[in-house]
Structure formats: structure tokens, C-alpha cells
Image (cartoon, rainbow, N blue to C red; front, side, top):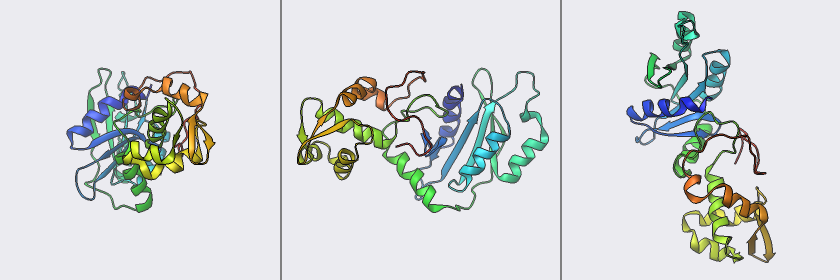
Length: 243
């Protein structure tokens, strides 16, 4: 699975000074430096170096200062990582290239330029905002079979936990969660996941789907990576625009 590449690549980028999280804004890997403004690093993962991996990286390039592609190194040494044309194409595109060995060591195959000009400030800003709002690193990069634990989903879960013991008003919820007070009304009214039911004006309760979500994602599991599985709890499937 591509998720097996995530931790080795994450550790590699962390050694370069980046704070790294997975599956943000459709990016398998997203790292931010401590600079102001931060350097934004995007990584894309595949089990083998191929054209699709490069195309994904091209899609992300407009929002990133650095782009890295990473894949398994072929056991026989006949993969694209050994093809000088593929490596030269990465250099021309300005992409870094990382090879992950069977024992999860990372080899630097192509080093990217220092930074590329930021061509899409809006996309970049959305990535930075999601990275900073998301608590912990709950979704391993390369995940495809589980709903992504976005900052929005984490905030909705915080509301659900507060409602687990009974209905509350929007005002009460805001007082319990000042960090997301500006989002509480929007989350309850939008009810994206079907977790909330309006009881009276400004008063909400938890639905059966909401209680199931709390079982699916206890507090500690909403902030740490979970293994992929084929089970589905009724939440929206993974989407590049998923909340």
C-alpha cells in the first residue's frame, strides 16, 4: 500500500526541518517550515515511479514551493529510478525524487531546486490553513479506503462529543469549545455528515449516525493515523474536495 511509504518519507522531510502531515487538500504529503511565510512542501506517493506519479505532482506544483515524488525502489534495479531520462525529467520539472527501499530507508535520487515561485497563492493558502487547523496527523498519506480526518471533521467530532450526553444550544457549545466557536453554528446548520438534529431553535442533539461516528473515531483516534480497511461507516468517501 502507498501508506507504507508515508512514514519513511515523513521522517525524511522532518529531518529537513518540516512539520509533516498526510492527506491535506488532495496531497499525499504536506510539510511546512517554521519560516514566516512558511516553505510549503508537497509530496506524492506511488508504489512505483510512473507517468501518473509525475502528473499528480504537476497538479500540485502550482501551490507548492517544493514538490517531491516518492516510490518503492525496484528490487531488481530495473525501475524508472534507474532511467536517466525519468530523473532528468524530474529535474526539468523542478521535482525532488525519493526512493524507498524494502527496509524503509529513503534514498535521495534527485534534489529539487531551492524553491519554485508560488504560482497559485490561493491554493497554497488553503493548504497552509488546513495543515495548521488539523490536530495531530490522523491520516497517513496515500490513504484511499478510509474517510480523511480533516480539520472540519475533527471540529464536527468535537461538537458531537459535547452533545453525547444530551441536547445543547449553540451558545453552550461555543462556550465549551472556544477554539472553534466561529465554526460551531456552521457545522450544526450544515450537518454535512448527518450527525446533528435540530430540537428547538438554536438547540441541537446527536443522531444515531453521530453516536456511531464517536464509536468509529474516539478522541485519540481522531488525531493519530489509522490503518486502512474496507469497512465503511456511512461517512462520505474520500474525495479530493472532502471536508
